[in-house]
Image (tube, rainbow over all chains, first blue to last red; front, side):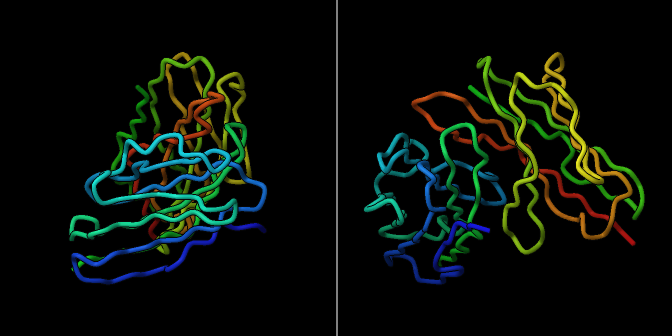
Length: 113
Length: 117
């Protein structure tokens, strides 16, 4: 089965450090989404792309978060500088327009000390 | 604005009991999709079902069944003869069906289901 691949699976770093999370969507999917899961907020959308173009990143703190798709096989989510409140599980998902279910990666568990 | 409500935060049952997880949604769209995802203790999100707003037929897949009722804006999920392996957090989600927005999901808060032996 095709899968969404996220790296790293786990990341522990100190506050102030730059964090980069990567996602390889399923081949052929044209939408890519970044979600964040915390106990307090649940699952919330940070940003999404369609055909590599950013459609909405209103869920992201713009001053420190950035999301890009340099090519169709790679999406990145960066945090600079990181803060303890950024600790969460970050999920990437891909899909094909609105007719298909989103398939999720296994997530990156991020801990900012 | 879209909203999904899963009023049951936690449910605990004994193995072989039937259990229903409730999901109520709000949307102004006439075309939309509803989803259920399972998140086991290992943490990944597993797709279970997608239903579009024009298809109100109930669906059964093995021990799982879904009851979609537009009149009450509900999309409930029933597990028959529950098993310990069904223990997980279950999320209901809603997506728009707009050309310009892809299929962004709005999630409910999730229901933690614990099936005890």
